[in-house]
Every structure is written in structure tokens, then in C-alpha cells.
Length: 418
Image 1: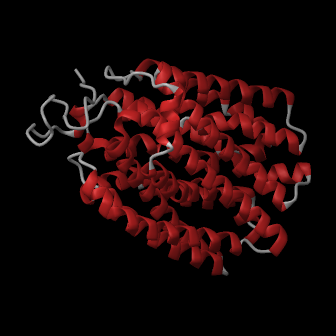
Image 2 (image 1 turned 90 degrees about the horizontal axis):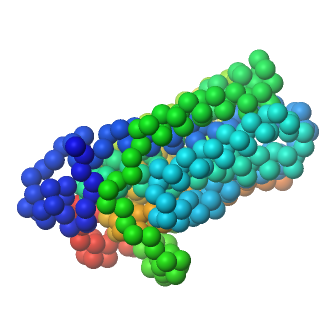
Image 3 (image 1 turned 60 degrees about the horizontal axis):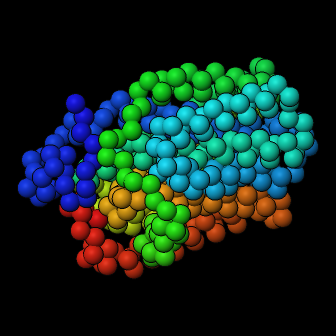
């Protein structure tokens, strides 16, 4: 029988962490819930970025400008960011399992309505983007659902595996353009309801809230978290790692079609390759952070991401750009897992709302990147300024990590590497 996470100073045996025998990862928590969290997150992420792969076709139909295309693919990211805070509160009130079911039903109904009624205007795409934000808010459900079952020494792996659900962006990039060519882009919205419904049924069967759910907090307690400097640092770090990942995932189909004249299907394949790289390494990033500490992992991540994004801004050919995007996504994906190795070390008791806050910051970072790339293309004729500014943000994050690491290592007493 699986045992839930107890306290930051205890492992799953209930003994102090330094005195308890080591327990393997797969025996430390509840694998069916971990699988359910991954599947739910995976399909939710698939539809969260759905407008990105469909953007070239939608833009042709509706006659959108580059700035409008950038805003269209950025709105789901911003809506998801804001709704993650709502989900963080909901998770603490009714538990992650029920919160996830509510979100999934809203997304399915929204997509079905959009398919049946049709989306015929730019304003309609923005409204759909808001509905898809509920899928992006799944982040604040899936991670606490998995995290609450695991002790500190396995948090990086648990959060990394659950968070690997961002690989759903690969499915969107692979299949949405082809289905749009065959049936029209509006039909893709209806087709997406099929796998979402299947996964919802599996989720309801497998997922189980951990027995040691923290007591619901008062609203003033949530506001109190924002008075803690560490909360803001973690939010800022995730705004760069996850913001870069999801911003690129939403924007690359537009970049590849506009910059190199690729067909939507080929652009989808290129995007899928880049996104797959970033998704694959998320659990590896968590495991790496468990081994060497999240601070050291983030230091490497920001340096590599900054160099790769500067290279992208100067790339003149598809092979070079593709290779640099893969490197950037590998770094950013590793960073996503690394940040969420740190979050439960500092805020285990508030993991629900902190996941929402940190996830919101990541979504805002993604909104900025996706929208800024569209604006840069429209007003300068090039995507390069957008990439260069985000590379600068990675350098700033690197400097901030260096500034806080000594204090964190001195004051966080968790028994895990920081």
C-alpha cells in the first residue's frame, strides 16, 4: 500500500530523514496517481498550445497580421497563467483530483462548442484562447497531485515525471497541421475532444488524492506568500525556463513558416522535434537537481539557454536554427525540472498555491515571448530582437541564482540538495 508524504523532516517511514532507511522511488509514492497526473497534464498541454500549430492556417483564413498571430498564440498562455492561481486555491480547497476533473470538463465543452459553432474572427480566436487557458492551468493540479505522495529526496523525480506531460505539445505539433490539411483547422478542435474524454475517464479511475492533504488556507495566507522573497525568486526563475519553453512551443510553427517558407506540416515536424527535446529532459532535470542541487543545475541551464538563443537570433539557415532551438529547449526543459525540485523544498506545506503562483509566472513568461516575437516580426521584419531580449533575461536569471544560492543553502533545512 502506498504511503503519502508526511513532513519535510520525515521520510515515508515516519522517521527523521537522516535516520530512516532509503526507499526506492517506485515504492515511495503512488504510481497510479503519478501516471494519471502525467496523462492528464499531457493531453491538457496538447490542447493548450493547439492554436500554435494551427496558426498559419487560421491566419490565412482570417487574414491576420504577424502581431495578431503572435497575440493569438500568446493568449492561451496568459489565460493559463492567471488560471493557475485559481487552480492553486481550488486544489487546497477541494483537492487536486476534483480540481483536475472540473478543468478538463470545461476544456472539452469549450472545444466542442468552438467546433460546432465555428470560429470566424480574430476575436473568436482570442475567446477560444481563454478557454484553452483552463488546459494550461492543469499545471497547478497535476504537480501537487503527484508531489504530495513523495518525500523530499524524490521530489525532483516525481515533479519531473508528472511535469513531463508538457510533451503533449509534441502531439499538437505533429498531428494538428496534418489533420487541418485533411479536414480543415476548425475540425481539429472537435477531434481534440476525443482523446481528452478518454484520458478524463482514465484519470478518474487512477488518480487518488494523498491521505495527508494539508488543511485549506485562508485567503490572507496566500497573500502572505507573496511577502516572502523566495517565492518571487522561484517565480522569476520559472518565468524564464518554462516561459521560454512554452513561448517557443507556441511560436515555432509561425517562425518556421514565416522565416523559411516551410509548409505547415513540415513546420509542425520541426516544432515537434524541438519540443520533444525539452519535454524529454524535464524529469532528467528533476533527477539532476536531486543529485547536484537545483541551484547548480539552474546555473548551467541559464548559461546554455542564453548562448543558444543568441545563436538563433543570428542563424541564417534552417539546419543551424533547428539545432540551436533543440539545444535551447534541452536547457529550458532541464530548468523546468530543476525549479520544481526547489519549490517543495522551501514551500512543501503550501505546494498547491505555490505551484499555482510559480506556474503563473511561467505562463506570463511564455506570453511575453510569444507576443514579443510577433511584434518584433511586424515592426522590424525580423524575429531576432525577441530572441535577443529573452537571452538577456536568461543572463539576468543566471546572475540572480548566483546571488541567492548561499542564503538558500544556509537557511533551507530539508535533507535534500539545494
